[in-house]
Amino acid sequence: MGTTREELTTGSTFAGRYQVIEELGQGGMGKVYKVHDTKIGEKIALKLIRPEAGLDKKSLERPFLLGKHVYWRACIASLLGEKERAVALLREFFSQGRSYRVGLHRDIALEPLWDYQPFKELLRPKG
Image (cartoon, rainbow, N blue to C red):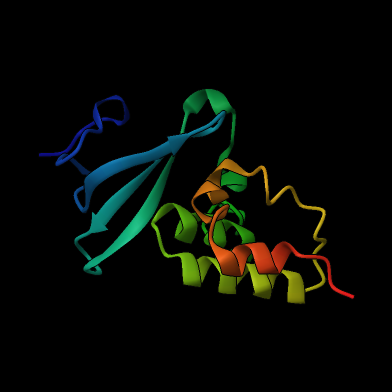
């Protein structure tokens, strides 16, 4: 049985393939859930964007919202508890010339990493 966005609860199925495990968090654009994708057989993060967020179809096709952006993938890995993967993705993010000024120590999606030693080392000033 499928559900609407408002009804996503643990154990429900969304879009015929995503079995909801738990809600990971929410923000101004919508909610993020840990789900089991029955089509690929893996646990993933699913972000549902609220209609009020005002995004059109073109906006939704941007790589950032599809999880292809390295920083976004790091946030998803962090929320899924995959700390090593999250830090590796953040290293990749910085190796692409991105600034360390990104608020990593304040980003709520990275909160699971705040006490993780490799993450602290990543933030330590070099030099």
